Length: 368
Image (cartoon, rainbow, N blue to C red; front, side, top):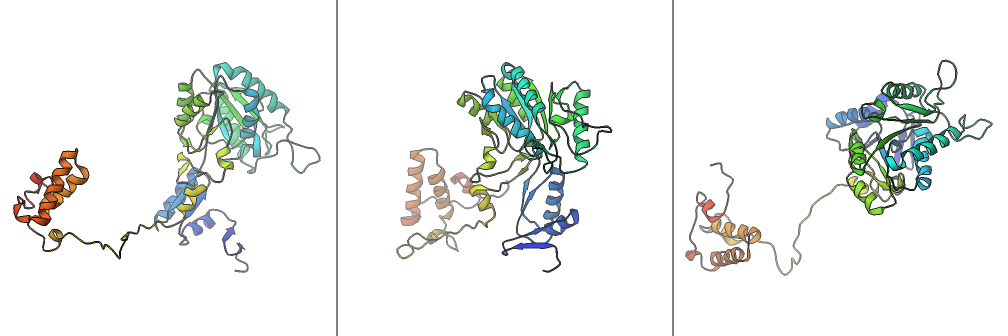
């Protein structure tokens, strides 16, 4: 209503700006389903709150997407994707490329091209007088977080080839420079924590197997990319990457295609939105059975199974199970014969009680 701070759009959805208290109020408001997009830490809190009312939740959380470059990849074709995946929106994108895994045959040239491009990027206020390629970070305290990640990597042996330090005395502000850093190792924080910034970290690997292992050695599993001139090779790598989405010789194409489901695995969340799967996920699924030809044939329980059950009931059910799940043609034909006898000549059937059902091929569920 008026003064509530809620903006209504034709009664289809509501937009409410706020902080943690607003989010908690929304989660516990009695909605039918929640789709949360945000950090893994807050996603856990959302899920915990929703559990109290058994509200189903879709969690689209953080990412640390690998970008594999095979030794036969076309570097001129892929470099624009690498730069876009890292520096678009200053890297503040959950499906941004955050781990560049480059095979030895392409590594040195890839590094040279990335460094040259990063140093050429123009940075400044988007609304300022000069045309720029890169702007500022959204959150004032995020630059300090990025610097701590870079400093940790350098302390553990990484090399900064572009950027890597806030400009100006005191190293403050929100304009963190486009950064290229090499010689990455899995123990560095920048290889395991979400960066969400304009940093392009490069690891060198010797083979497809090593590339896949490094790509999967991460708590996150949202998006991913693999580049190779051999399409079959790229598909084979993509199939083994632990991620909810993979683009082959492209970056984030799965995000741009709204007909595809969007979501990740591991600490990147679960379930999907977008695509047919996402739409169906916002619907209640209900199973309904009915007779195909009710005017000609109605469903009935076989007479020997109706209460009080016939003395041949166990034999009939055992034969029915053998008919459906028998190991061979002869077993199934024998089952049909027994079922026919139960209908037509019940006195000719060797009767089994519940206790003797096991010898007739029927497990009753009683403990022995």
